[in-house]
Image (cartoon, rainbow, N blue to C red; front, side):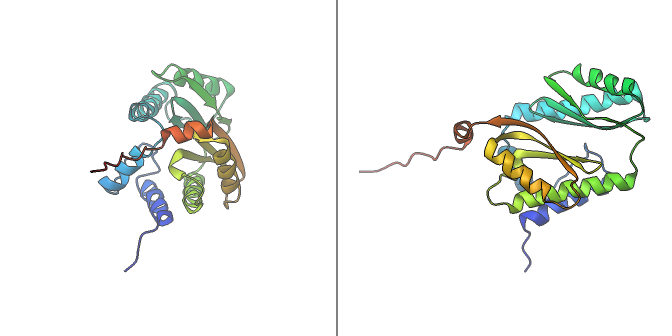
Length: 212
């Protein structure tokens, strides 16, 4: 009997995403247990997770309305901080994207990493998605990292790390990402928390009843 390892599971998620047409919004259903555990272990509140999903959907829709298909923009929100990556033809388009995203409900900050270039090919986007999957898989393999604390985005070989993590975790994740084949550059868009704050997020053990 073969057992499914966490690393294999991460790559399986990646493969499913590619099969759905490389859409960041495509739902992935592995099993209620797996997906439920991912939501429960996220360092954001459930409400914030839903807000982030809503931000990504609304921003993508408004960008299509304003700029159509002539740009390639990916929107990633974590804790209501939004990272925009991809390519646009002009500096004016780049600024317009930022303005549109900034006006979306619940957005508190925008990190504009758009490049003024022609749109990348499907082959390049597939390569970037595969690199993202390898980074996540390597984080799973690193026993001193909590992979689900990070969002990973790769654009033209540059890998962006998002999440709410300690300085120790940020440094370790950066090392893991840099050592992943296909990664040309690492950009951290991280919220740094103290070790004490992290401990406060850990579930407290249930009290033990002692019967006399």
